Length: 556
Ligand code: DGJ
Image (tube, rainbow, N blue to C red; front, top):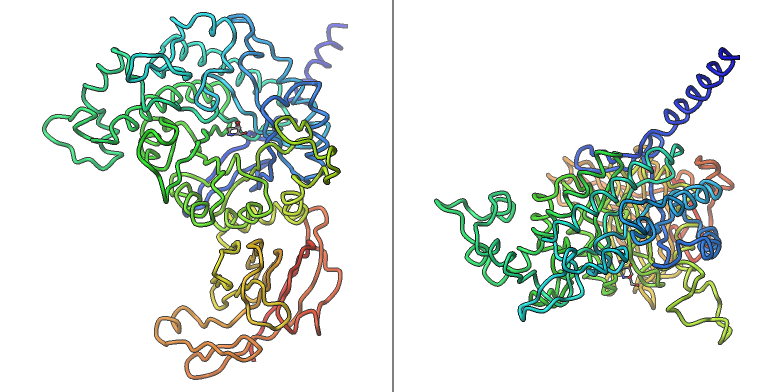
């Protein structure tokens, strides 16, 4: 009998080990300045949707999963609420975590879990009641007038200790419970920082503010080391308060992240309520303390265990959006957009993000719980209208997301979205340029779409073969000459119907050898037909239908 029990325990252990082996812990890797999220050992693109804040309850989850299915999303971002997780001090309730894990497995969807801990949108609203009822111990930020504001103080040691304990318990549980590795990443806090005060002006915080700026902050902010370290005001002038608060909040989160990582080394990231980098406004006009673009270096220096500083992008003005993704795509920071708007205009920016090797993207509030949203059934509007722009993207990209993630990691992919007043964009691939144009119809001059909704993605499969897709655009290819020829010659671009270029005094014209239209089946491109004649004579035209082309080129 004992032998039978021992044998079955052993086989259960082996099965568990095999399972864990089959699903390694997701991790972020970097090569030649490009990043990938490895899931089951290969680059993965998170096509996400974030639920509404109060949706992660058994009563509302059905309205989340049906939206995820409609969207073709492969990842759900959803919160874990500290108030639910630790209803009594030191007593952890794992039921919500277990429910979301088991439902994600049933739906074959990955998860990004959002730890709504000390901070949620700059406030402490998700702290458990036993903390809210003890504001002297778990104290708030004090403003310049000596009043408490609706934001937790990063100097409240008891809050930090409590968050470290709870977050560590959560991560430890995830490690044991999530053997299938449904959870790809965890967000630590939500838009940490403070609205309504640039920093904590309590006497204790003021004392630290009047002391020397830590050496790593001076270095990170390119302040030359002097004989004695300056205080915050002397070092940073008008920016001193926001820099100080960023340092204090980053230090607090850095400790939580380090403890959570020690329990379970998943990728951990922090999201930012942005300031507009093109029109930032003075300190005090944006959330202070979080990883806004002006303090990214402070966050990197103070909290190195954080894998990604990630922008929540609700700025819909095209130059601002593009500037944000440029600023958060750094050699030390992979681009990941954990929240953005899912409107028809914003949806195209997924392609701009892919052009900067984004590892994931996730519009906010995409479920059917409809709270805070006008009920469309009242006026008869299409109840899926708010999901459709994202669904259109994901329907196209999800079946090929493994190829996209891999080609992007290998540096073979370019993607763009339409910019108002710029009807043509050029993408460079070795001997070929891909010309993307918008609003030209068949053969007409590009003049831009009536609304800027165009987007295109081109990836090089072989020297003369490309994967091409997009919406509301036309793509064509032009010989670009070799790098050497480009350096030594001025290349003349042809203006006739077939894209051509005069290189080394000789005209080279593009010809399509073969344009295959196909679809992805189990991650593999399957050609369905060869396009020619009217379907290619005016370039490769993409409208509102999801179409994927594999294009082989030659010159004559
Ligand atoms: C950004 C926050 O991170 C989200 O949780 C949510 O509050 C949205 N803003 C607005 O609905």
